[in-house]
Image 1 (cartoon, rainbow, N blue to C red):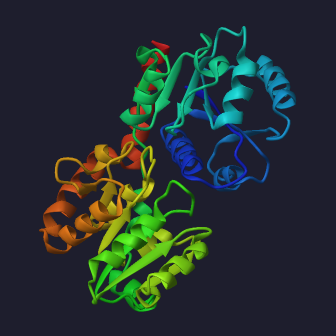
Image 2 (cartoon, rainbow, N blue to C red):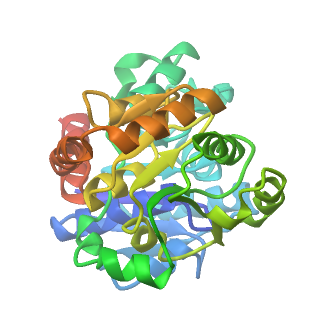
Length: 346
């Protein structure tokens, strides 16, 4: 197959990482892949040696990029055009309007309402790919035809998680006792404050709360105000967050809104048990004994954290690891993506 991916993002994100996994896997399986992206963006830098071709677009000039891409498509034949992120969707849709040969696939990986009628109810879109059933349900409730939506779970390149020395990580970062960790950039809906307040309620002296992510320094004042700053370690943004996670005893995902958290998949594959809130796609990951699910409140999260101290964590880790290996590796994701493409073309 000949596949064009359109990704307008200029910052690294979970969605960008999923695109990188897709492209590398498709090239490995012998497909011809071109990536329309911003020159020297994280996408370009990560994939420039992957065997994919490139067409450069301008994130700030959507209509100009769409026109240039339309002209490019007159010279190149593609079977599939797969768009990612909001501006990428717009560029792809405008470039393909009134063109009939290419199948247009739109990626959707967030729980925000699909309010843009032009993009999400446009008959030119052949298929939507949602990264969880929770995202599919949001789209369905906003009048997207469910027959045009396929679910392909996000995935992790599990090869990069091998051979991490847990004890070395704990020594490097002075982790002691029961280490609860939160990994995620600070925002109003990530629930960092709930996690800190829940940790305060535990009153477990031999425990720590470790927070990794951009802008999390803003949380120091809360920890000081609750008189637990000596047991709360805030590491800020770290490129090696997955390595640090290997030193946790428990990963906590306290989000108020979450489509399908990649950090949970990493934890599954690292053998770290997960507590997550009962929102979005988190229950899809943690149900059937693969973790503990709590309501996104201080009291419920504190209870879940205490429960995780006393339960059979090995049993939880085993179920989560098996589920991840069966459903959430890069290999499994690309196999599912190829199958969906082939069904669309048949």
